[in-house]
Image 1: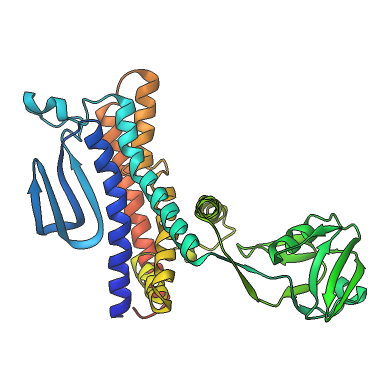
Image 2: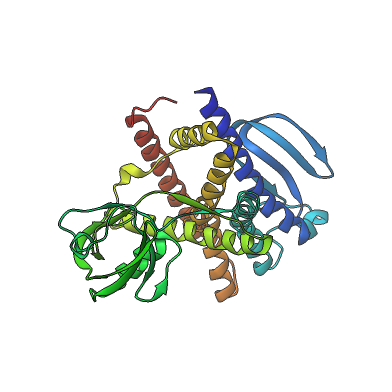
Length: 355
């Protein structure tokens, strides 16, 4: 339990710091005054005031915030503070300040993946067959466990992912598979069959298969700094894509809403990763950072995405959204978030997994 709590505080602390630092640094770049930069909510525990900014750590370590001068459109501002007011900046500067939070979470993920790929390299499944299914196309053709697949359809194969993609996209046409068996190189004609299979979201889909499973052997792949950066951007994009697809499929009812988790689930996952090693915990932070960025740009009032919607409307119509409309939207957004928080806490508690 202690490991879970410490890991949760580390994860949230890093994520919130980068998110709020994004808002902070771009706000200061555009000359907006910042009154508070807080890690955590609630009563101030300790901190230091530099200039007009109170840098503080607060009692509840489940988030954080940046309080800018003139952040609320109806706030009373002294004449000498108007040049530092968020509300008095152009709509495009305000949009940049708001989007900086999620953007910095994306940047954090890229930097973490880049460092890990540079230091540890990448690992991919090799092309050795671990198991051949009975009554399968592979078995009928003569493929065996421990065969190393060298090429498919004349195309050299280096990873198991390439095998899966090539067979999936075969269209059911017979393909030549060359393998290394012991000291021999052999070739087989295999005709993939269209069968029911489960994708990464647990959905049943029709897919061309030959009936082989990977041995699970992992092969290390050293990466230069440049290659590691490219791989880190690709990895960040893949995590974002899966996050968006998961939300869409959850809305469609194709993924159970019981999969949603809150702080308790995050603590359990963070603790599990921490126990496996610091690199695993850092990798987990990168993934959650991308999740946070995607969630924050959803067009829900009180989230960054909701503010961007208001500012986009303002940019189009040439005047701010009315105070009544903005307040109503924010109240609805707050209600939705509270309902979501109650739901994910309920999910966490009904999983019956100890902290």
